[in-house]
Amino acid sequence: LAGAVIEILARAYFNFYAFRFIGSQHMRQIMRSFRQGELGKFMLVAVLFGGLFAADKSLHPLVVFVGYFAAWLLGTFLSMRLLR
Image (tube, rainbow, N blue to C red; front, side, top):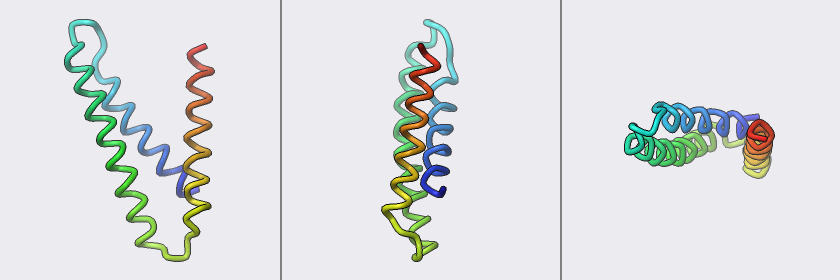
């Protein structure tokens, strides 16, 4: 569950940054927002995983990463289905 929560928080952070601007007149701001969102998402995931493993030594890393990957896979599948 912890891995899935990390994925959900990171995806929400990226979506907040990436989709702030709409319209062709904001193209430069849209591209900048995508870069900021992706960099922030990467750093957020690294910090959250680091903090999680530092705070709770009893967690099994494989289980946490499987939860993260499962949430990522579900989010990707649902996004593809929504865009269809």
